[in-house]
Length: 150
View 1 (tube, rainbow, N blue to C red):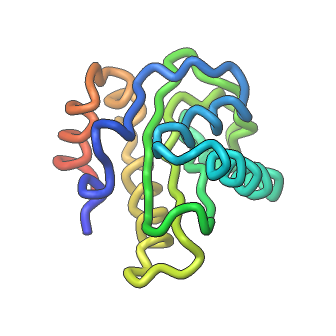
View 2 (view 1 turned 30 degrees about the vertical axis):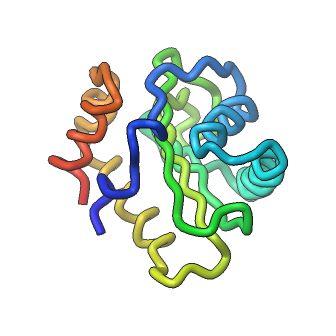
View 3 (view 1 turned 90 degrees about the vertical axis):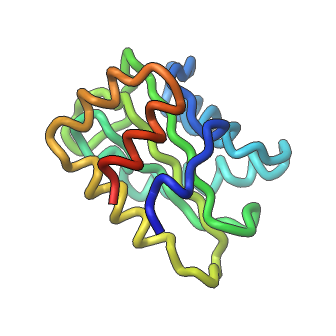
C-alpha cells in the first residue's frame, strides 16, 4: 500500500494555527473527523506517547503516532505550520511538518509500523522539507506523495 492511498484532502491542513505542541496535536486530531470524546481520548494517548520521547525526528518533521480504540482502521493526517513550533525535536529545531498516524490496537492489515517507516523514509529525502514548504494545496501534497513516497 502506498502512502498516497492513506490520505484524503480532508486530512491535510497546510496552515495550522496552533502555537504549542499540545494544540498542534489537538488540531491534527481534528483532521480525522472523530467525535469530541474520541478526540479527547486520542489526545491523552498521543500525549502519553510524546512524554516517552518526542516524535520530532529532525529537519522540521514530526510523526506523532499511537494505537487507540477510537479508530477502527489506520488513519493518517498531515499538517503544516509554516512558522514552526517547538516540538522538542531530536535536533532541537522547530517543527513545520506533522504526519499523524493512528491505528487500532489490533489491525488486520498490520500497516502501522510499515507506514511509520514509509513516512520516515520519505522524510529522510534531503529536499522534502523544502518541497513541503512550497506546497499550496492539499492536492499538491497528495501528488507529491504519489510521485515521491514509497
